[in-house]
Image 1: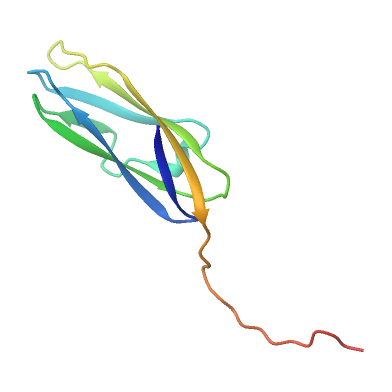
Image 2 (image 1 turned 30 degrees about the vertical axis):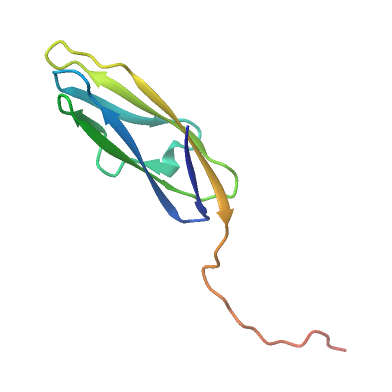
Length: 115
C-alpha cells in the first residue's frame, strides 16, 4: 500500500522503485484502476522500462478533490520482450486529507442586527 497524505487540493508525489534482477530488459505497461483512479496520475507516461540488473522509479501523483479518502490500484503488466515476461505487480493507492488550507480570506463588515 502506498499512502498519499497532504492538504486538500494539494498534489502529493510518491515514487515506486522497480528492480530488475534478470539479464534481460523488462517493460511494463502501467494502468491506474479503481473508484478514484482519475485523481491519480503517472506524469512520465504509462510505459516503464527497466534495464537488466538495474532499477528505476515511477512517479505517481495524487491531487485531492474531496475530504473522503481516495482509493485506486496501480497495475504494472509486463510486456513480452525477447520472450521474457516479468511478474504482474499491483500496488494499492490510498489517500488521506490531513489539513485544509484556505484558498483566500475575505474580510466583510456588516451590521449584525437591524430593527
